[in-house]
Length: 199
Image (cartoon, rainbow, N blue to C red):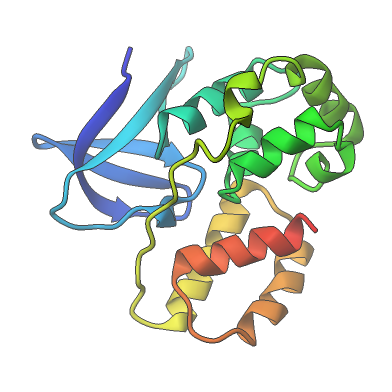
């Protein structure tokens, strides 16, 4: 139903953002909410909508290509919206496309909720369907948001990892490494954590 929404981001939470479009607040679930900034600037978020018996859910993406990759992942048996968002959260969609194209099942199993069988299914279903994603970097670079303190930024990044489905022990493991990093934005902390988790 929706292709995209254009409005002002008024709230950022670990699993979603709220976009005000002409006085209507849309709760939009996103892979990495900290790509977006609260403020008066208009932000375009590409939308995928799902409707079930109990809920209507909006999923948001910073680019059309990211939305299209999400929809391709959803078409794979065993992949739900939460798993697809977790795969996209690290912000390196090109690496995901390359992993699928090169049969890199090990890389795909590093994401929460993705076992070996599901990773093999992703490769099987999508290997020959990603030609449009392979030429250069087709994905928009995320925006960053500066948090008031590095502790708040780190706490937000860890909360986002929990929302994506990572286990507490894995989060604690990367938290130690991130605490030694110089002051960063929430988005930078989250990107660094996701890189550590998918090594």
